[in-house]
Each structure stands twice: as C-alpha cells, then as structure tokens.
Length: 99
Image (cartoon, rainbow, N blue to C red; front, top):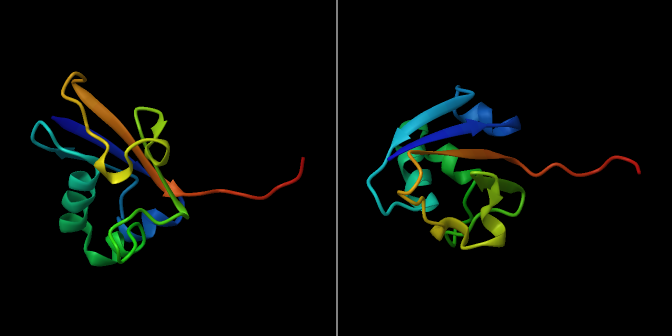
C-alpha cells in the first residue's frame, strides 16, 4: 500500500523533505512506517519521535487520514488496506497563544 507522509515544523530538520511516499505491505502499522522512514532518514529522525521504551513522544503528533493515533492504538495503529493510499501527518505538538 502507498502511504503519503507530510512532515511539519522541526521534524523537517531530520528529513530534508516536506513529504515522502512510502510503499508498505498490507497489514503494516504506523510503527512499521516509522521504521521505514528511519531507514531513509536515520536514527536522529526516530530519536525525535520515539521514546527509548518504544512509545511515541508526547511532544509529537501523528495523524492517519485525519485521526490522531494517540487517541487510538498509538504506533500499533493499522494502516488499513481498504484505502488505496493513506495520508500521515507528522509534526510537533503546538501549544500556547491567547484566548
């Protein structure tokens, strides 16, 4: 399956790209996608997304087709084969501002 990944904010420092397209086998998860991206962009990329225990860092958000993986299965979120392609957004959590 084809997964289009769009990188935001400081994450781009570790990719040198604004986006990437990754081909993954059916049954892949977001964790599999991160491993594939780490192969391309290096360990520094992964270190800014993943904690030493393998969990997603709290200062990073990842959405799959508009749904935040933190509210679901996290890195075990399945990239379902029903869609011809998926859009995954990866970036830093943004906070602050005034009401």
